[in-house]
Image (tube, rainbow, N blue to C red; front, side):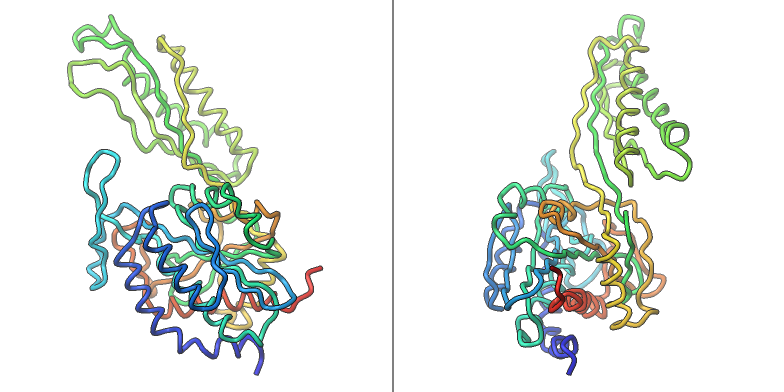
Length: 406
C-alpha cells in the first residue's frame, strides 16, 4: 500500500471523535490569549497521541520525531471572536464575555478556527498511528490570538525558535466560503498586510453657538475622512492594490458643545511593502496637513495596532503542495485561491525561522451558500469539511516526508 494511503486508511477511526470535538470547540470559543480551556484540551490530546508537548506565548506545539528526514510544521489558529452566533445550530455557542466598555457580548467561532484545530489534531493522530509509513519530524502548532495579530508574535517572542526544531517547510489552511471539500492554492502574495491606526486630532472646545471661539475637530475629522479617499485613487499606481477604510469617527457627546478632540479608526490593506510605506506616509501627511489648515492647537497622534504581515506563499512549496493535492483530490477539487484582502499573522512564525511556507483555503459550504468569515451566520458543513482539511494536512506533509531537502 502506498505510504499516503496507509496513513489515510485510518481516517474512519478519527472521524467520529473529530466531529464530536468540533461541536465542543464550536460551542465553547475563547478570545485571543485567553484560550486556557482550548489550550489544555489540545495539549492533553497531543500527549495522548504520543507527541512531546511544548508551550510558548499562549500556544501549544506537539513534536513528533520519527527518524531522519524533513521537519514539517503545520499551524492551526485557536481563538474565537466577540460575535453573537445566529446560526441556530444545536451546538451553537451561547457563551459571552464582557468587552472593554463593560458590555456583555457573545462569543463565536465565526472564522473556522474550531475546524482548523480539529483538522490538525486529526492529521496529527493519523501520522502518529502510522509511523512506519514516513520518516521525519512533524510539528503540530496551535497558535493563539490570530484575530488580533498578537498570537504568532507572542509565541516567537517567548522563544519559539529555541523551543522546537527549525522546520524545513510550514503550512497553514483556512476555512473559506468555497464549496466544501475544495482546496484553493495560490503562489505569491495571497493575504494582504494589514494596519490599524487610531488617529486623534485636536480642536479647541467651545459652545455650539460660538464656533468662532473654538476649533471644531468634527469638521477637521470630516475633512480628513474625505481626503483619505484620494490616496488609493490618486497616489497608488493603477494595477497596485491598496484599501484605506475609516471604520469609526468618534467625537463629542452633545449637540451644542464643540469638543476638543476627535478620534478616527483607520484600516489599511496592501500587498507590497513599498505600497504600504507610501500609503502610511500619505495618511500621516494628509492628517497633519488638515490639522495645520484647521489651526489645530496640537499635533495629531498616531497609534498603530493590530498589524498583520503580508502572507507571501513560496512558489516551490506551493507548487509541490498543489500537485500533491491534485494527485489525491483530483484536479477539479483544487482551484486557484486568488488574492484575498483579509490578513493573517501566520507568516511571522515561518519568517522567524527563515522557512518557506504556503497557506491554502479550505472550502466549507454547500454550493451557493457560503457566507463571509466573521459573520454571525458562519457555519461550515462538518463534513466533508473536516475530512478534506484533515487529509489536506496529511497530503501536504507526506509530500515532504522522506524527501531529501539538503
